Each structure stands twice: as C-alpha cells, then as structure tokens.
Length: 209
Ligand code: Z5A
Image (cartoon, rainbow, N blue to C red):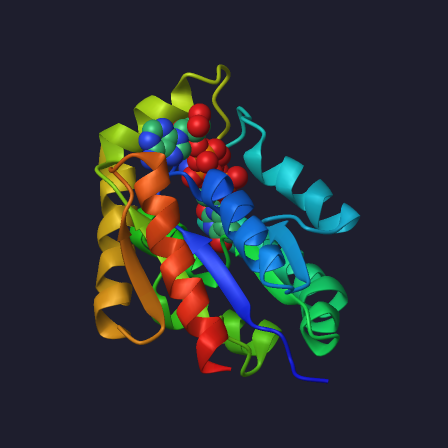
C-alpha cells in the first residue's frame, strides 16, 4: 500500500481554507483518490473538546504556554489516532491547519520562541511533517471582513489586526524558507481562481506519483 500524502491548508482567518479544502477534496476524489478532510485543533472527539476549550472566550487570562500545550495535546491525539492511520491506509489527508499555525499564532502572534515550539513538534510528531502546505495569503483585513460577517467572535478572532499581521508575516517567512514544501497562493482573488491554482498543484502531485 502506497502511503497517502499529508497536505495542510494554512493562513490567517477568513482566507478561505475551509472553502478551498472542500474543493480540493472534490478534485482529488474525481481522480480516484481516497481523501480524509480534517482540521486542527480538532479532528477527533477528544481533540474537538480541546478545541472548544481553546476557542471559548473567557475572562481568565490564558497563559501562552497553556495555549501552546493544549494545541499540541490536541495534535498528539489527532495525529496518532486519525492522521497517521489514514496515511498508512493510503488516504490523502487534507488538514485545515497544522503545526505551521502553531509557529505562526503561538510563535509570531503570542511571542513564544521558535525553539520552544520546535521541542514540542519533535516530541509529538517525531519526523512527521506535511508533504505539502498551501499557504493562502491575503491582507489581514480582507480575511477578517470575510470571517466576521459570521457573528460572535471566538477567543482568537477577538485579537487585534496587529496580532494577525504578525501571524501573516511569520507564515510568509516560513514559506520563503521552504519553497519546495509550501505553495504560496494569492487568496485575495476570486474563489474560483484560487481553487484552480490549488487544483493545478494537486494534479501535478498526482502526476508525479
Ligand atoms: N490556532 C492556533 O492558534 N494554533 C494552532 O496550532 C492551530 C490553530 C492549529 C481556529 O482555527 C483558531 O485556532 C484559529 C487559529 C488557532 N484562529 N484564528 N483566527 P480555524 O481554522 O477554525 O479558524 P479560522 O482561521 O478563523 O477559520 P475561518 O474563519 O473559518 O477561515 P477560513 O476557513 O480560512 O475561511 P472560509 O470559512 O473558507 O471562508 C470565510 C468566508 O469567506 C466564507 O463566507 C467564504 O465563502 C468566503 N470566501 C472564501 N474565499 C473567498 C474568496 N476567494 N473570495 C471571497 N470570499 C471568499
């Protein structure tokens, strides 16, 4: 059995990750690929319970290490009980955010050091890294306007524009450092153009196998 591909979708809020994952899954399925669509934090019942803890707005200040450890606790459960078994079974896993989000949000956004995050990455993931990362990139204000038309804001969505600007910058730096693994996608364009770009990259991945 050929191992599946692990593909993640990243970016600041409202850039269109969920929308594009659904289209990417359909494009792969049309080529006969078995796909698992999942997300972080979350993806298993226990990890979804941790997600609810993380996203719920609360009066108590949340320490950045508490947030970091909860992200990786959810990830350990998700990776080892859901993602890796699916990859071993030959499925392609499309995941809405993964550890790049931790470097961007807890690192770039909250100021936790890269080294500290890397220690947990190694502990939880060993050598597992996404095969391909689609970084959907758009001005922070564009994504915020799209996402905020939905109503009540979660704990992350309540952050200031400057927080998301640091997150975006961190993502862009990571993408520039590893151009083979990242596809930087201009997500400010109309939805169908973004989807066509991603589809082209996925077809190229399939053709190489
Ligand atoms: N987080 C973290 O801090 N550390 C970590 O390690 C991880 C996560 C894994 C929840 O993630 C929070 O967890 C997240 C970071 C943190 N907080 N924030 N911000 P999430 O992925 O669930 O949250 P999100 O980024 O806020 O998701 P989102 O708002 O659902 O965004 P999206 O999935 O990128 O967008 P969408 O739902 O596909 O689209 C939003 C709207 O825009 C929708 O109405 C679409 O129809 C529309 N849209 C999409 N694309 C377009 C284009 N191209 N043109 C026009 N309109 C569009």
